[in-house]
Length: 153
Length: 153
Length: 153
Image 1: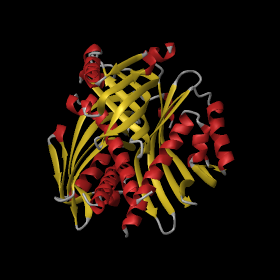
Image 2: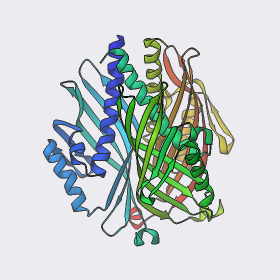
Image 3: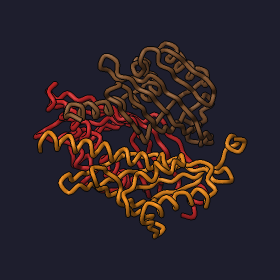
């Protein structure tokens, strides 16, 4: 591999880590432009356990917004860990995987924790890496009883 | 951008990820030299929700130490996630943001969890990247009831 | 440092982050080839608090598998945070450290959380970075009471 290709691989990895992070910040902080910027045109967001797929950036963003409303969420926190990224520079595609630890607070102030894994596909188009497919598979979910502290918050 | 500038941007990102991690290790493991090494001279640590600011490395380190004493902490664990870093090489400055999941054990052995976001500013001085400002905004806090296991620990 | 050496240092850091992640994915998803691929021949896995050491890849993988069986684990989730990596290119060795947040579900469906720190040593052999020593030191452990939600799951 040339020096240039080696730098490009490191830059691709950096760009993909950033997308993984912006997905979380965008959803949790309801910065919907940030959330939208993660996805290539025509991208697919698959919620595997629910058998759901959302196709295209407008549908994906609408689904993100509706999750806040549907669950009456007061807070949402997605924390990524364990990113693995495999870049194919020649084909301008990459595979990614990351675990995520989710803490959400529902309308009744109770907290729910979930742990899931994202399996991703990325493409570089016009020089820009974005996500073309994210499959979310939840494997764990449980509820933390609200403490007195929370109930007063 | 030249190859050199592209490498420098990747190195800056690497250095800033390291500072984000050293902040946590330094505070949690009470390695105060490590904690101090994260900050440029004159840096500001702002605890936004409390309306507090600590200015300069000696004041920041003193505040870190006093948090352990004031709360009678037995353990502290800060886990970062979702780093986003924007480097301006020409100006030798960078913006960063990371979420953090905090677990602390208080003097009565009870555990408290918090989730917060750090919004950071970095500067490169004499070739070395360090933090010049960190704003910590806590958005979630709740208490985990101590288990029998904990009470016996 | 030459441009090449600077790229090699960034690549080493990238490779080591990947090993840290593959350890978690391999153990948690019981992808034992992935778990095995993290370690150099003759590597040592030290569980400091228990005074245990496992030497060599076959012994390490056997121990990983036996932990699932011994504890009757239904799920395991290791989430890394705060990676710090120091690379010595000339000597082809590196030191690493990362915190980890562990959530495991036992046979009775109860969940246990642990927080630990890994202190690692890496070597590059035949151009490939792998782990030669991991010391796991657990500093926190507690139990989350199973919720109704979990009991029905």
